[in-house]
Image (cartoon, rainbow over all chains, first blue to last red; front, side, top):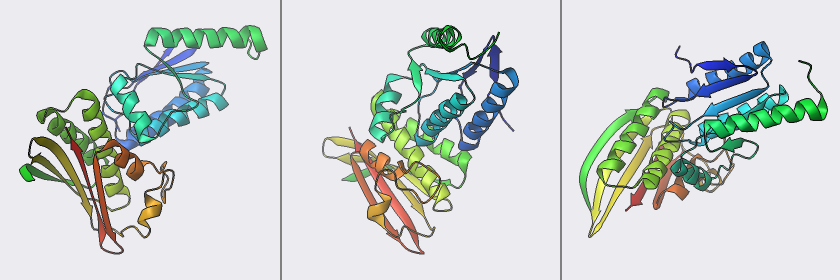
Length: 129
Length: 134
């Protein structure tokens, strides 16, 4: 079955969604990400959706689920690059993506993950090395 | 009001939901809708096509280009011969779902389009027609 690739970069996992996802593909991405967070002890997940020309309720729910599940596995999630037309439509549809952190682009998204990581290291000392 | 162009396609599975999104995009572009309107139309099409598959057991989607005096519009009609909807009022409420979804499909699609009509008969099926005017 077709899969969306997940890249590991240091303590982070990166995903770029570049295909028009059908529902099973979205569910597979959710499962794969959780497995990879566990395997790599990832501290952050960045999902870039700048290539997506639509986020409907199913994809929106998937993004929310990923953020919530990753949170439980002690990883931060940031969704980057949402197109303005997609954001306008999403809110009108009735989805505000509460609980999902967003950033304008990948660069800013990485900064968010970095600062969250610094915070957890200095602030709480929850993780070693 | 005149239908100037008309096309019907089947929607039976997830892959065809993706196809319906692509067709909705092509139709919206060909009728000169702007990017935000295109996105709204495609998103509404995705929600309604998914409903047709999940709750209606598959069906058809009809795309129609409309001329109404100076107005031009795009109408999408989703039809299935599924179990039908027992309580339309309830089905249109935000957050109500008999499945595993968020319950935003019908209500969300209604907000994204200019016109929304729904007919459903128990045991016979459901027909949803949505129109976006330019």
